[in-house]
Image (cartoon, rainbow, N blue to C red; front, side, top):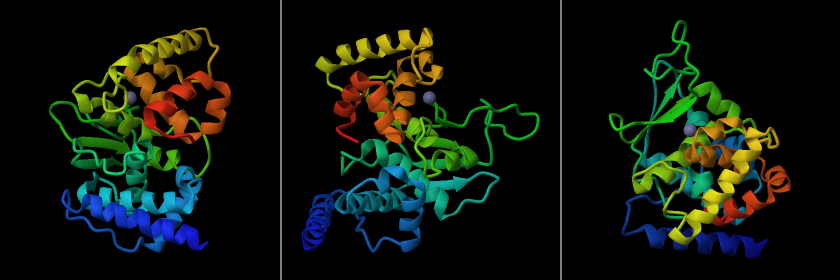
Length: 255
Ligand SMILES: [Zn+2]
């Protein structure tokens, strides 16, 4: 027990020291209500050891201290804020100092929306989340019910939160193309894309349980496969061992 406490203190001290010059953010005690949300809703967090959970909490606080989260025609509360932050932290958990320089604001819509960002009756919206185009740089949008469904505390293969933040990591190098240069170096890109195309063939032949939306292009494949990888890692590893091995290297996480 003491070992874990000492490790946690060392981790926090290291984090503060490392970030001192970069940001004014200093973590304070993590609110009990937020820990309850993470424990009940975010399986990824629940499965971390105590040191990992402390690191996750610090990242959540830092994300929320630096990004604006705004409800559009809908109320938002701490549950939504913490779930947005969790979505951002999960795929970048191995990179303690990463905090999405390409994101400034997250908009929460009351429901699914269409490509003109209209929602409700007559809009026929089926978009659950999206990252801003060149006219809306730095903006991410989520449908509130979809975000809540993504974090219901159960393992499954969909998570709109993880999906959109993986696009943002992918897009850091200027192109959302399924090869995030932050995570994949040149020599690894070709084998990765070869594996992606192999799995796409299986999806086409109905021999894969990965959502066929992944066939849209390599970028959607990465985002869709990441939802499954982070939300139900055991099942993903069992069903897709080769893909799992690649993604473990890409995200530097063994789940
Ligand atoms: Zn997408």
